Image (cartoon, rainbow, N blue to C red):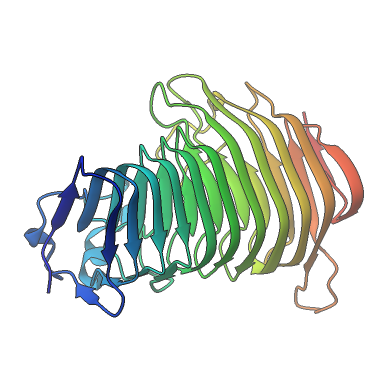
Length: 334
C-alpha cells in the first residue's frame, strides 16, 4: 500500500524510474488523499523516463461517490498518474488499474511519448478517462490497450500537435477531442491525428464534442481521424456541438467553438446504432472544411443484414470523396 507520492524537479537530466515487476496499490479510502491532483504526481522534470510498473488505484468505492449522472457534478478524486510540466520524456510499459478518476493526466507537457501502455477498469467505472491531455504540445501515444468506463483518450483545451496511433480502445466512450467550450478563454486545440486504431464495444467511436452556450469563442482545427476499425460502436463518427451530458445547460444557445479542417478517412466496421455518422455542428459557427472519405460502416440491426445505417449532417457541408456507406448526410439541415 502506497500513499500519495509527488516527485518534483527541477532535476538534472536524465531521470529514470524503473518499476518493472512492481505492483503499487493505492489506499481504497478516498479520505487518505487531500486532493484530486494525483496518487503519483511527476512534475517539472526534463528528460524523464518511467519504465514499467502496475499502478492499482482501487477505485471501486470511489466510483460510487462520483456519479455525475445523478449529482450533475463530479467530485474531486485522485488520478492514478499525473504528469505536469514534463518535457522531452517517455512513459513506457506502464499499467494503470481501477483509477478513482482519470488513469493518466498529461498537463502542460511538451514532447512526451507514452507507449506500450495498458489501462484496465470495468465499463461501469465512472469518469475514468484512460489518458487525458490538456495544454500540452507534442504528445505521442502509441501501442496502447485501453479498457475503461469513459473516454479511452480525451483531449482538452490547449492540446496541440498530438499523435495517437495503434490504440486498442474498448470498452469505454471512444477517443474524444473535448469536451471544449465549457469554460471561458480556453486555449485552441490544433493539430490532432488519430490513426490505425481499433475501437470495440464503445459508446462512441471518434468524436469532437463541445458545449452549447460557450462563455467565449474557442478553436478546434486541423483534426484528422484515419484508418480506424470500428467493432459494434455506437455512433462511430461524431461531431457533437450540443454536448450536454446531464441536461443542465442551455442547449438552445449555440456553441462558440469554431471547428475547421477536419477529416474522417478510411473508417470501417460495424455500428451499434443506426446513426453511424453524425456531424452536428454549431448553428452560430458552422463547421468549415470537413471531409468524409472512404467510410464503410454497417449497422447489423435485428435482421443481421448489415443494412440500415444512416448519417446526419447539420450546419456543415462536408467534402465527400471515395466510397461512402452510409451515404453521407442522408439526413441534413442548414
